[in-house]
Image 1 (cartoon, helix red, strand yellow):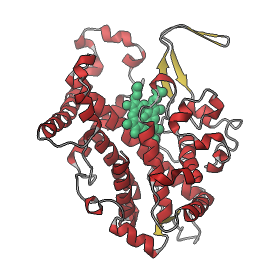
Image 2 (cartoon, helix red, strand yellow):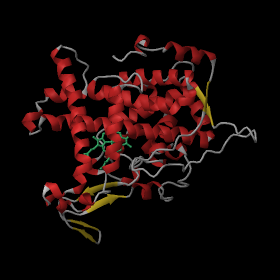
Image 3 (cartoon, helix red, strand yellow):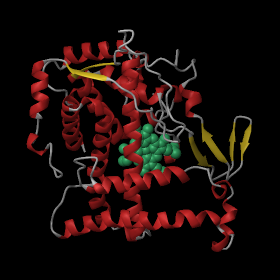
Image 4 (tube, protein in one colour):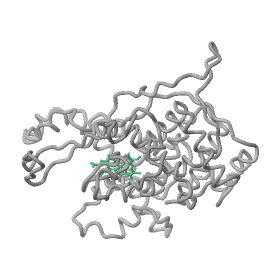
Length: 384
Ligand code: HEM
């Protein structure tokens, strides 16, 4: 999916250059388009895209019922009540029908496209051809797998990037270090994925933002499938075990001065050279970069896509722009951003905030305007 991330990140730079006030909306378009393209081979050219709006409406209902907010999720035995007495269904059953229509609409659209011989190499194309019915998966379930990917992959990456920008304006010394690295390694040309090996500070920034502000606010809950002895604890099968990510990420023995957004903490360690996937699989948990993608068999399957989306946008954003907190007109000083202004939601992302973006030089501005790179003519079309 790197070609899509390449194209959409160049479009992000253009959007920020021409409409800096809405820099957070542009992040949303970027992450939505990357995940839609990976899943259904379909770009999101604008946030007004009606399919995207339907997805966000659905996602907000999902966020409402997600987790253990409803008694039935804490006490599944309630599902044994006759359907008529299952009071939560009255409100949410109609939403489920809408959701089925949404996911099946996308699914059937792709089938038509395939029948017309149009291929993009997206996930659903491969899924259809992998003969999912043989795995005991119905068509609606298959459409839900794809829909879940869209839901799981967009908001999570978006909130992480929003936290990154907040971290940058709150800790401007990080911007200076990133500029130094990018100027030294990349210079005047736009950073590419291939530069990653030479950009340890940018890689460390991606790890650090995932540690600093995990999007999973209520940790991740898993169920033990068998009896387990852990040290002196006996954990019987069927126990809900919660991975306390925030406890780990803010443990000063693991991450000194954990409140600081400080990518330097990873430099000079083995961890900075490991990808998210490699970190997830290290034998020694102290070599993990963070736990934001979860742990164990249910670990996030989208970590490579996410890491690449974060890397290329971070590298290009900092290559292109000076970023600052706005100046307070009363004091003439730059505002001190509130780094804990996050609404209490399950998916953790900062409340809308302001930041200033200025192209770092006129040549970079020209390249951004021209969409320099592969197929610049596609920057504003809804197909790749
Ligand atoms: C910064 C970006 C992301 C973060 C922080 C993140 C984090 C997570 C976490 C914490 C989980 C639960 C893991 C567990 O239970 O142990 C998860 C699950 C999941 N993620 Fe991600 N994710 C991100 C991006 C993505 C992307 C881009 C995709 C799509 C390709 C994706 C697809 C999924 C899916 C399908 C699940 C459910 C897996 C299951 O239940 O077995 N995620 N993610």
